[in-house]
Image (cartoon, rainbow, N blue to C red; front, side):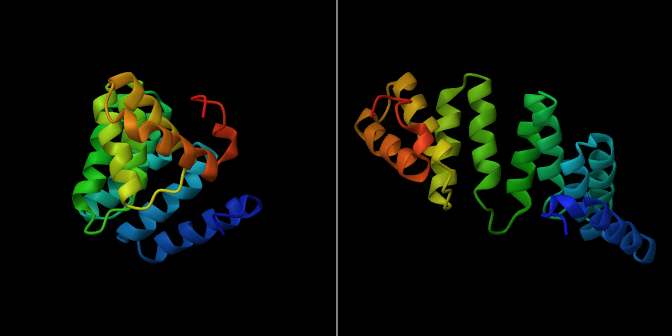
Length: 169
């Protein structure tokens, strides 16, 4: 339901009914955050993510949604804290929090950290052209691994042709 934007209200009803039946379900509190994120209802995301963490401090996804809210509100340090917390609790973390941390550290102009997190995202399977594109750019800015810059830029273009010309490849 949630992925079909025309059925957001239906998804919300399903999750609300689920929470009536199982109010202490940390999973449902995290799942409903996706609906609220699509609606940009940040207060509901914060309430539900915090409730999920209150019920289960190791629930996957709650810190991610808090990080997304703080990122969207330009609270960079808070977002970084939440994405790092998400990584800490995941047994097999995926690449999303690493990509988001790469972006956030670039916002802080801490390109060395941005490079670290983009590399980790790629290592974990990121197929976003922007991860490769940003890695190439920040490597130039940091004057590090220049020999790999063309490869990263080329990969960015392969994954997303809109990156063509961003670094002159």
